[in-house]
Amino acid sequence: MNKKVAVIMGSDSDLPIIKGTINVLKGFNIEIEAHVMSAHRTPVQAMEFAEDAKSNGFGVIICAAGKAAHLAGVVAAHTTLPVIGIPMNSGALDGLDALLSTVQMPKGIPVATVAIDGAENAALLAVQILAVYNEELAQKLADRKANMAKEVIDKDKKLQSQL
Image 1 (cartoon, helix red, strand yellow):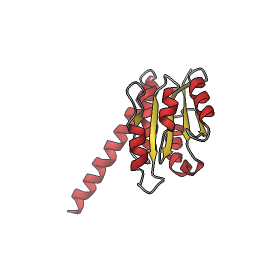
Image 2: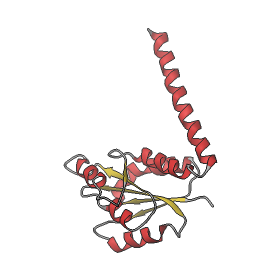
Image 3: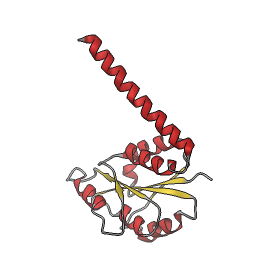
Image 4: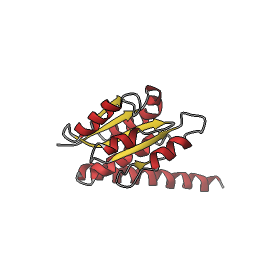
């Protein structure tokens, strides 16, 4: 059975950025569930979701949060699944507060962290994690990287022809 990816947002205001995560995962035909949960306002729901995620068929959990950004850490504390944090630019500090809150996890509770608003990379990291045991996904990733390389080579050829 293929594993699902959970995408949890601390606020529905994160959705415009998180659509990038969802679109990449859908592009790889990965089943997703998206939810709004808060480490501070709905801590019990976030904990219960994390505790049940593995038995509910998830392989990776992606958490997006801004400001204090404790969502990924709270989820990681309650699961053995890989958790990827997306620090969101949602405050006066342009997301630096969220980045530091997400990346500075205590020993024993790791959270993989992508760039501020790094929605697409979070999805790609989730795909890479799932692809460790799924050759079809691994091939799709390899094809994507080959296409990216071809695009750069084509752009360089175009530039060279203009010089």
